[in-house]
Length: 102
Ligand SMILES: [Zn+2]
Image (cartoon, rainbow, N blue to C red; front, side, top):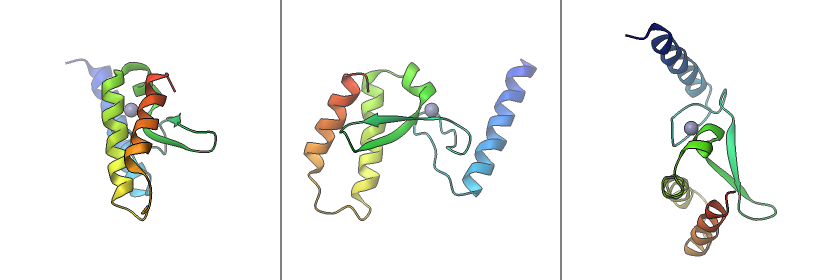
């Protein structure tokens, strides 16, 4: 067993547990907590952005996987108090932003 790798994973688990208990959300890609992990903002318009995944995941995940994670967050938004939005249109805008490297 690689001890260093094991300890790093243990520290991650502890930090994520602390972040969760403090009410912070998580990256949908690696589940790391926003209290300590830098999120990546998909700036899909001049005034609007979303962050379904972290900077690290932004650099490593495929475009298709990023779209899936963005869809997860959009689905969560749809179930909240965000009525009256053009969800199909927003999904296309977000996917286009991801394809453009945003
Ligand atoms: Zn991540």
